[in-house]
Amino acid sequence: MAKKGPKKGKSIRRFGAVRQYRSGRWAASYLDPTGERRFAPKTFDTKTDAEVWLSQIEADLTRGDWRDPDAGAVNFDEYARQWVEDREIGATTEELYLRLLRLHILPGLGSYDLDQLTPPRIREWRTERRKATGATTVAKSYRLIKAILETAADDELIRRNPCRIKGAGKETAEEREIATVEQVDALAEAVGIRWRLMVYLGAYGPMRPEEQAELRRKDVDLEQMTIRVRKAAPELTTGRRAEGPTKSEAGKRVIVLPGFLRTDLRRHLDWYAEKGAEGLLFVGEKGAPFRRSSFGRKWRKARTKVGMPENFRFYDLRHTGHTLMTRSGATLKDTMVRAGQSTERAALIYQHSDLERQKELASGLDKMVRGARDKASEQVRKGQGSAEVVHGS
Image (tube, rainbow, N blue to C red; front, side, top):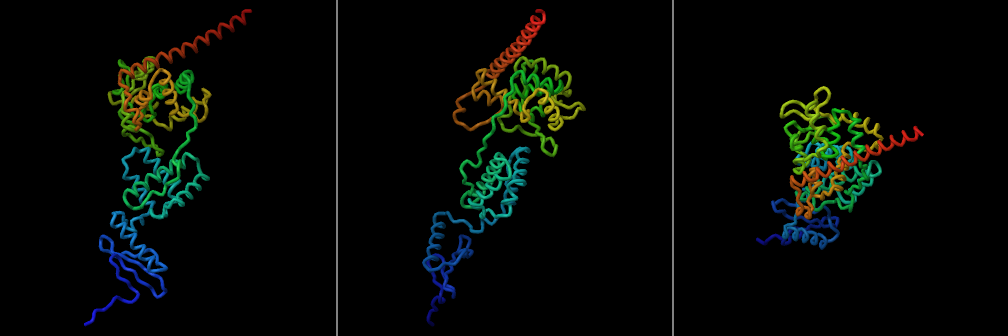
């Protein structure tokens, strides 16, 4: 019996197959590494075009660059939410990511699959967002999208990250107000005696409010004038205290306080801190743990009374601490250790700041603040003296 030849209109090749339809156009297909037949996503004008496409697929398979064409058919909304859930991040960071997704990212991009998020579509989203909200929020949102899609690329769900807008994730922070020693004293006085130590620790620690919220009596060494930061308790927008680790490993540290805070620290321990080693250092008038919301009202009143700008945040007290530490001779590494900040800059590896250096810095800060206070008092006395002379004349 004679062998049957190939079916008319179909061509058998070493790799893949091409076939001509009655319309005159050509289709191409091949067997993937699992043995499943894959078809080209479109038909071709000529047989040569179809064979060129197959040659490209064969080359990808040979180099190990072949990717399942259906891999990117994953909904971005689902993938992004799972991405956040899989991250080992703090409660406040998770809350931020979910808020950015809910309000700024998913409404515009959530209906697309991963492989549908092209560079033009990302640019279009960014242009729309820049018209609707602030530049800082857009930059944060863009960085989050880029991080999510970078993971998708690593997972081989997309070939390349479509977020390619230079500088789109960069924030330009406005210059923050730096409080003077006199203003810090005035704020501490205005916020009330129960909370004045918190103001001083924010400025001269410099400690984050969420770190102070989780301080315990056992963390304070009055004799050595040190405070050990072990954990943090940020308050989420839901009002829940999220007790957990510090912002980074660098946040776990021992802070040597300047000597001028000894009286305030001793008085606070005697009057306001909870009893027992595990007792919280800062509690409200009714004995409840520190709450950002209730303290915020006191802070805003104090800020107004002192005459500070409306955008001056409690967190900005850290800028005062950084500035004064630098003026007292601290290196960048010194201030990083004291403030509990981390960095990957290689140059910082060769700088060191041990406990003795921290004591030296605290001593220098002590002298600087005492000097500023004495100078202010002297000016007040001179002003009173001049007034008496004028009145007597």
